[in-house]
Image (cartoon, rainbow, N blue to C red; front, side):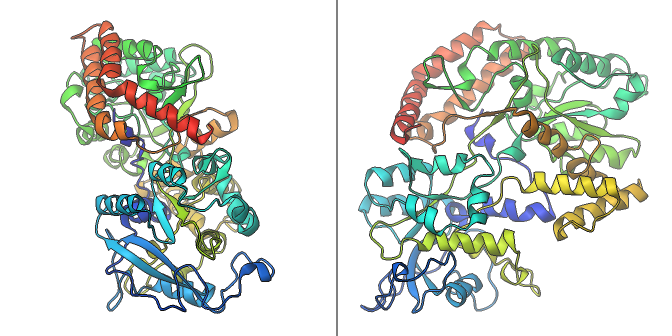
Length: 572
């Protein structure tokens, strides 16, 4: 199962578009520019003010304007970006605002057109010892920069210059992102935060089928098994044909997105695709731990009993969606936003159909925890020795203020052409609790029938849901209700994980190691083959033991060594 599967498929429209776009057009995947940096004059050096005045000579202002302006260099990729006529990555509206509001003139040292191109260019810059003043890098590149002593220690600068709102944003995940940006207690980068919480698996069940068959809500994995069994044996669709399945699986056997096996395995305290601590305190890969066995055997049992489509081994995700929306599958594990893309066709085809999202349940009575992978793939660093290293913190303060604290619509998009401007920002971060907060606020407003306290985005969700409440044929409103509303909404299930502390956070907070880059794709394929064989019954559970041995010998031990070296270097 690919490590990249942790990258959520949630593609929530409207309010979520910004978060999703950050993943697409952020620094390592689309920070961009068109030409090399124009030569700077002797009086206008990168990272320095034209005159000698420094912030130390005046009171700290987290977003104070430099006067005279300073020049800051960076590297960009313009992949996925669009520009208004006459504009470019070197000459865009965000850079204009930086200069006008902050006194910061941004110049692109180099520009590429793809994510791979950016990674290669950044690696060359790091190897040469000459990086731009501010650079977006991967966690692995961050480690190299720290070891080479090429970047600033931001610990004191962050404490001094970061606004309380920015500090609050970076603590929404409990400080995980900051920890991933630190080595031995020192902060060397600011993270581009995204939410791992939103990727948590929940259990989606056809609630109308449960009601028809007189089934109770699941409290244990035995309940899940019995619900799936009933969906196969008791003709929930009433067509007098044995044509329904209990649980949806795809040949990809994804551990995230929809359908997923992640939540199923989590019920057995198994954590495929993430790193956990073993008995000795070392980091170990979840997919090779003995807890995997009981989960695999249960899936094999369900397949043999006809609860899983006999053709799951050749059906991809899109085919599973077709089966779900055709009313052939009554249960699957998936993300909180499944009704926006995976199973809303069920409702479109039958307005009486309904899906409920439930928190995952345990196989043995010990509370189950959902896997939570490290969402940080991009961090921002400052070249060591520039005169104004606090500029990174100021830029992040500015982004947070203009996009989240007091959203400024004049800075995000051209109202006439629709061209998005916010991707031009050289630093970005999103509140990881944003959607949970929206859910809580929308739910309260629905209960009170009063949207007065909602912000514009939340009011949009409320209006869609309220339209559905008044007109049940409005499927779009139902889709949003099952994400942001109540009565077993996706975010409601995830909110229960927060309340009950039901997250199993990966212990590896770094990026892809050299051995991962070289070997993990092959190991992932081996894992999928092993799982498929056992579930289909063509191999016994001893196949898992063989896989573990092969995994170790064919690169897994080297990956584990590198992961633990990272942990030691980072002081984790």
